[in-house]
Length: 453
Ligand SMILES: [Zn+2]
Image (cartoon, rainbow, N blue to C red; front, side, top):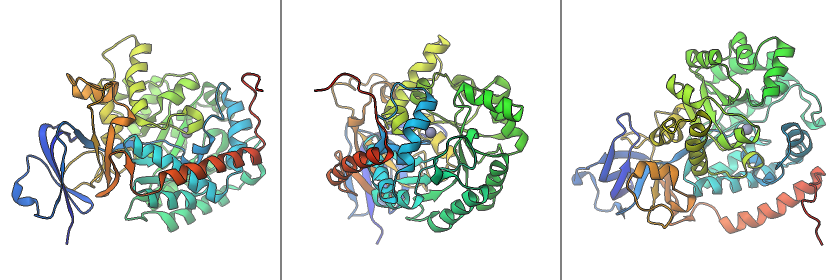
């Protein structure tokens, strides 16, 4: 017997190709799929359907975070007020290289909780330490995750544990794909990762793309993140990062380029021609001092989505905050309040996210035949009312606490702010202990901000 959930009386934002909105509409879910949206024929609703009255609520597709380091969740606060090389060599590498598989699992659970509470039903992880630990966590929390291993085959100062050959790095990823790809009813997927061009040989980059094509998955890589990266590639390979990747023949529609802060107009054209997907992470970009050419990329029709990056790069694993930042910073540096409009930001956070992770067929909008990934928003709070312009309010005045409930893959993940799939209090308690223990093992010592007694 197929189980139905019938949501009614809601303001519905479908994010379909016509950007259809219903002032008072319905969504009918059957098992893991959406079967009808809008003004629904009552005959479709079975007598035993679960009825959800969403009067005065907003219903929309779950948000898609296209770049989040789930394994770094317990490292929040390790990277504040330092430059990128100190961040990487003295804080993050020691932290990550001291994680166990169980740490990776708890870190991902903790990260997933924050994602769920901020409306995210689907995310892409660029490269954590243990895909096994991450996959276990995602299968339990009930949302969707594209996972990848942190992959590096060259570079100065790498911890001994991470000094691997190209062949070793590729073999372990293939093993992860065979073991975890398309598990948990298809919610867990595995892609290939390339951390940055500082730590990837040309051989690794070329072979990674070939294997991604063979397994029909994507490649997730940080690209043109800082100015020094572009200078490094120019010195060592004779071209800018994007031009070099183009020369290697790896830029394609299954290539997810993250940050892309330091791009020339010619490189934006290359992305457009190759249908490369872009993840814009505004908070992380601001930290390393750069403005991605998002207004230009959107105008060129490049698929730009939004990501939070990791906890030590942003400290807020919250897509709602990233939407708000995206709405502000481009207006500011372009001196033009009309760029990157609210509806474009909602597109970036939903359907463009689905395109970015190569799953537009199943995610990113509320349409019959798609997976039932739905959030219910309660806007009736002091900081979100009144709703003169509901679309703008979703970007400019919504907060995590407005995300009331979530369904993913047809199952309730959160109801009235309570996560139903895992024990939130137990995870928080365990995460606190593990964070302390990794910090100690890694030998990281943060400077005293103020003298303590
Ligand atoms: Zn990142």
